Image (tube, rainbow, N blue to C red; front, side):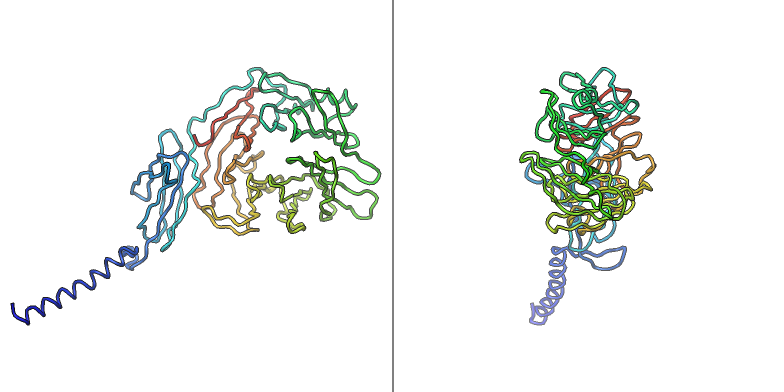
Length: 432
């Protein structure tokens, strides 16, 4: 082989090697040619986590197996060109899950916390005889007792779910105090005690139903009157109005059930509209108050100030993680207000709100947070399970149909509903 031939071969190999090496390196770094845009782009990925596992994943028209297991929680699907994808999650016996996902260059887009809903949601009859009321009021911390109200005669009943016995709390309270019940809740620290507000003079009582004893922890006076209250952990939070002042002054008060001490938290904003509800987050960092105009005022104990987060709300509820508030507008729109930064699936800064205009929104009676703080039970005539992911489509699935009332306890995971005057119960996790 001549020197000239060797040189020609060298330059040919060199011409082939350099672009081939560059192509291999670029490919290994995720660069691909996009035939839709006729451009070289860097790929991204989608990371998917579902409950339950062992699902079939479909992205556009291509199928992928679920790689999650004991060590790996989810499935990472790589080498995806930047664009919008339609994903489907399938499993026998479960409703199909849909979501539109946008993949961006060099980034991993999440679709985590996906909960598949069984088509046949298992439940059992908890109390076989007809209940004496039709509206849930409260459940004990261990979910062994329940308070139900009969709206026709305004009587409250305490049911023991272990032996199916019932107690007329209205008669018991009237015999003990000579007053009727305006509001009632379970005492957070002991299962045999109740917190009751009387309809006359608006006093708050702690009633021991076993010992038939009661004590007053607040009573209206010439100086102040009770507006609203709520119990959380070891505290009763209530709104007190000072009487005799030129302007209506509302104060937010905490009463510690252990120390039996009262402390003022802050003065509520005065806009001459009475307050109707006060609630605290589970971690008790945040407190929120609702007035008759629909204004929700949020108090952050770290900052020590109130700020208005809604102006036309009917009712609201804190999420279990204490990082969000869901509230329903008077026009039926469901809103999620973010108290802290949220990075799960969607990114939201503290103070941002997303809204959902649901079908038949005018029929929404109530909603309950699921334990993961990323889903809600929506009660209308039926009950649906809904995600709070604003990426379309919105996944919302039926749980039970044609019921009288519904209750979900996120602390215990138990679900209850009333149908045909019977109490039904499910200890099944929503995703099993």
